Image (cartoon, rainbow, N blue to C red; front, side, top):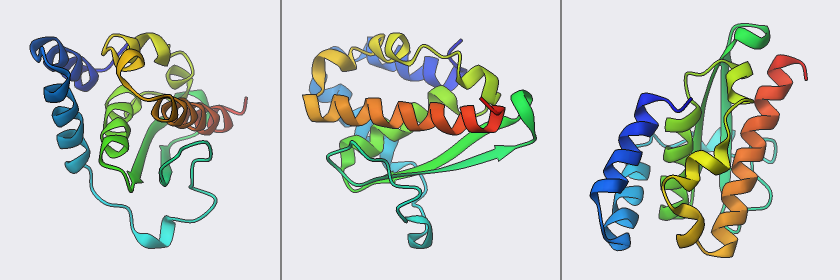
Length: 142
């Protein structure tokens, strides 16, 4: 179910043998994201459960299960900013219904992130996935 952008990341991870290179790639992905306007960095967009500061701003076009899901995000930590970029590649452009069908642990597991992130980063990543699923669920009406 993964989108082409996520598949490209997965292929790049397969190509890069060294985890330092993979971390550099994650950081580079994060640098490519546009920054959030400070005005939207408010408690309503902040993701709880992350050691770093993380904000996710949903952009949902349309109504009901077929509405298109997108979001912007930002973190004060470079690695986490890269994780936001990876989640963006995984979810952006899907219908809100399909967002709820994504097996994020399995997809992210393909990148080997589970074995190479600290417990705090893993918890933060899980919190971001839960927030994305919550936003999609609200858009579907679930």
